[in-house]
Image 1 (cartoon, rainbow, N blue to C red):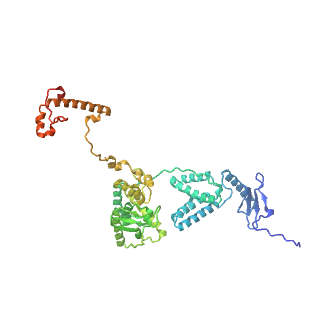
Image 2 (tube, rainbow, N blue to C red):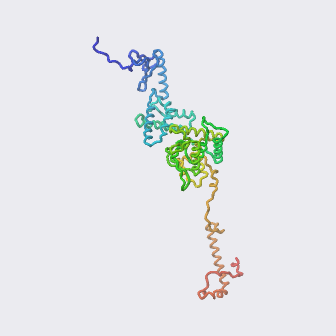
Length: 487
């Protein structure tokens, strides 16, 4: 027996005597082989300075050779289309790292908790199915543009596609920071067109409220949406949103402790929500929001619903935070039922109306009905910006809605009455004045000479100080036949 013993090979090392070339017409680097750890044949190919291998999923050699040929053709096709030749979880790993970092920011209160929820949804549904086989270094403008084309083919709006591009950019920036990417690829440009939701004018809003009341308080029929009846709460939702400027997402998580009734110096509700889509600052409502809120509490009590400080204002029977999306969904679907029943689903310009249209209506009412409204104050109270109001909320605003302001006239201060000579040019006006002054002096001299006999008699009773002839003409010119005086 030989004293030397051979070192056992690892179970993942190919069996030397099993390595077989595919055949004529294919490169020598394309081979199939067996592994001690597997009952199947494997295929491998050296390309782009790396080894690519895959299981053929068959123990039969002939089937393995056919699989290897298809495997090789697939590699050539991927190289031709600038796709990675091997599956790699790198993009997925970087996206997981991004979610972890964002979660740390959320835990510190520096980001909204909805950030990861939205990003994970996009990754799971769209991004990972498309990019999971890519290494971040292999991603180019073409790949990202193909992804944009795919989203556009599904009918997604440019604004939504831009959100997807922003998420891709965040992942690639993180990869670059970690040294996984030499340089960032150029991102496709997507032209966005603002598409504001429809709103309700005064007549449409009155019809909406009337229809909601008829449906909610109907004694003949119970109107159901997904087996849930439309009740008094939807009437209050419509009134309350239009009086408070809140978003539907704010209404979903609104608790009674978030609301404070203020009666002086003005009557309103001060609403401070736990979270918000943008800046979380207090919101002040219209005065009628107070009576709407108080009526809602009374209706809740009559129907046995809780109205404690920690209870939700709308649909309080859905108590868990994680289930509050159901309240949002119910509000949206029941509102959609009401606007369709009222024939108001689309605006005159063809825009779809959703429950979000109530917020647009609240802002538009302030722009069209408010007196001397301050746009900055309105924007801050509605938790938005002046730019967003101009781009979206006030998009429907036109001159006819504020015709009184268009036709208003500023009061002018009273001015001295103008003479005909004031209308003349300055040089002509001055010449006219000079001529008039010369005629007046000439006429005055003749009047003095004509009235000289009477002057002493008139000045005699005025004392010695009046003995000197006055340089001014007499108060009552004496009539004379002089042509200059007649003139």
